[in-house]
Image (cartoon, rainbow, N blue to C red):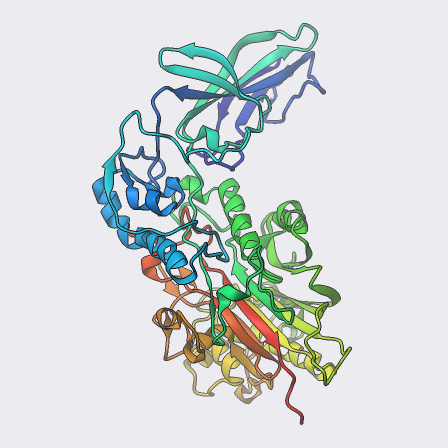
Length: 600
């Protein structure tokens, strides 16, 4: 007979909005072991599995700490309450917790205050919003009778709750009847119980005792401090926002570049400092989608997107928000893992703003085959191709908005967007340079065939001042650059060939050149020696800039940029990824405007 051997959850802490799917190990009637589901619609040997989820609700109200969400809160910041900041952000588990988090926490107060002081009304932000003003902090001890207002979002539960049992000061509510359950705001601070039992398909009666498990307290999904768009052209950004947060100027468009950190790379060994629940894919998937959709970019360039995640999650989810999707995964020949978890580059664009004209796929290993055939023995060919693997996705779009002006009425506005991930070990400097040079030469050919502005986005795994960065930003590499000393396949010779003619400029360098309010703080987060951010990647072992958005300065101009993070805005004693930010990289977002090319 069918029997349940074991049930367990992959994540130890349930989070609001993150799907819970228990692992159920079964023994079939033939004694084989499986974890396949056996629903009522497809019984096995006259039996199926029935599932139930319960919320165990205590009469004592429970609030959880906003910094350590697995801990019960004992203090509340009344300044947050006065400022009408979401109440879940006001709770702390101890005076030390509140003191340690104050530098990060005060940003909430400052922004809420500035919204009223500067604008006289609510301040709309690119990523989240606060409702009113108020600063000043007062700690108040929470008691068992403290109000739970704000701990729920007021939404109707997905499954109508019904009282099923009461024991002492606990009430059990049935909240679900499927194997999977997604906690709601009503579950915050409560334990969930999962029950699985074998049922006779004919009598509909349970057979044997149910297998159960209980979770820890459900916690709210942590949310980072909002990141605002900062004007670098002197314009008032807050006056240029749609009600939905997008830039309103008809001739402007926004571009996002973001390495999401593939689930296949997000190991607990590599990111041991990140809580296991925050590193789990069900949580990161929700958090990444919320962040990406929240930026409302017109063009989205993502790196480290797994093939299965693109097809099952990101393409269909972003389609709901009006995006068309294009994808290029890494090549199979040099990949030893599961074909479904191969990652690649994904480019999305808003259908209402752009239409697709052409797509180019760059496979660096194929471009290198002629080199390796000449330079190395056949037995070494696969290793050489591994060194030269990675892909780029180049998309030509046509704008549906007109910004050509009176001089060129009706002229098509094309835009070329390159999205790449140069993911090779740091010691293989020749590979990085060769891949960047190959990409730029391909873009030069496109530029020669059409009068077209260009964007080059991605994670280049190259710090400012490195040879790949110099090639991108300066159009050439100093022949004496130390990166050129590593060239075992002689793919970089002669060094004089490492040039290009595209007038590329790093978008974020505009923070050092621009004019506008709020730039002084951003300049402190820039390196004046390289004209790049101090970091776009922050782990325990490395902090530095690896990600860039380059643009052709003779045809595009930067209007505004998404503000940079600084180390103080990250939680104390932590790095990325974290409960707030689900990648080890930060997103870059730039607003551009097309400008007429100078006449030659």
